[in-house]
Image (cartoon, rainbow, N blue to C red; front, side, top):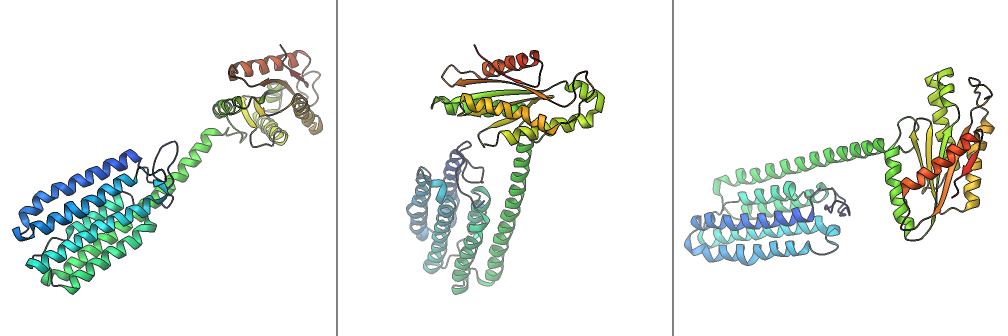
Length: 365
């Protein structure tokens, strides 16, 4: 989870999947838990340590928690989230270390150290500290704990056991974070692959109809503001049923794939939307084009089949595979409607079929 950018659609912090609202709620819950522990701790510590305990919790740790919460309202919080998390939790832990040390030096009271492990697990798993930051974080936590327990006999003959408990807790935490990150990366790759598969027509490798609809809507919205022109082309293979029945479905599929390949060679811009509309019918949306460019593009679609000369002898009078094209060009305005535009291009295609096929027609009012 090294990337800390907030996704503009999900409002999540990096790859943690935590939204800002969830994060703030967790901080509030964590702070509330810290306050609830005070009740049990105050019943445990000697009365002479009450003041130092309250100082550590209310006057040191609480302000740190509040500062962390307020930092989340910074517009660039996502860019420094991981660093802020690591620093904040280290501050809380070292304030805890200071409390442990003061309790021992003032009253020879061995304040429980288990909170160190609990803070760390909360940091690694709840707040989702990345493995990149978890390693130095854990080393600093361990170094700090080792320093106080080896320099002072706070836990007596249980010092080694206590140190070992913290070491094991941190190692388990690191292994857990590493496994989670690997699993999330694999899941992310799988989701991207599934997302791509859901957008692509499995036979031709170009967009499917659903993706066409979505992208067309995006292009309309984008170019409406600029008042640009959009042209919709509908392409249909001539006498395809006769070809498919006569040569078989395998060759029929190959012709459909070849048509898709032809279109991607004609429409090369990244903004062009080339999609299989259904069966042997294809649709293309091209933006910022002129009347002359549309005529040239339509002519190129027809000419590609004429150059290929793919045999088609299964229909009387048809010698080679051809296609028909209908297109509609419109200057986008607030009243532009993709359904209406596709219908007009489809009417033009029907006129091309009536003219004898193997030609293109532009829809005119």
